[in-house]
Amino acid sequence: MEKQRRRTRRLTREDVRSSWMVDLDRDERAAFLSWASFTVTFAGVRALTHWIRSGHGPRGGGMRLGGHHFHHYNIGIALLSGLAGYSLRRGVEPGSGPLRPVVFGFANALIADEAALLLDLEDVYWLPQGRVSVDLAAATIGVGGLAVAAQPLAVALRARAHTH
Image (tube, rainbow, N blue to C red):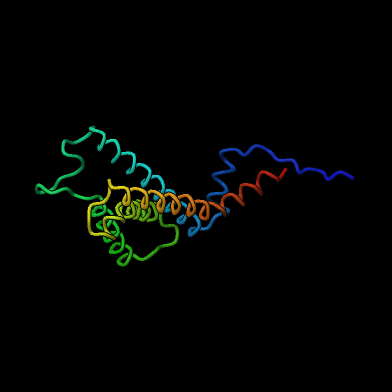
């Protein structure tokens, strides 16, 4: 006897919205937003730095502050410090919005992108050891983390697709 295939239906935008709001709890949504923010920011910063390096953007390449190159990990550290201070003061309220997990992922991506510089205390960003290690590590963390964070949403959407 042939095994009967379960019929699936096409998911609608409303299915996705409902899964997001109903099937995922606040912590699962925060994890997803944090990893998505990390992944998108890391990819964007890498693309931007390569674009600047190829002769576009500001003369001298990147941000300068007081005549010195200003590394973007400093922005990440400042954002994490601000976020931590805000969170310690305010606590985590039920139903708090997506801003904190998005800022958390964004700030961590800025720091991770320059991890080789922080580890070696030398500007190896454009040297092979800086580019390969950071690209590989951050891509793995970003894609792997996003896959883990997205798993509860994928399960909920799969269940909705199999309902009649």
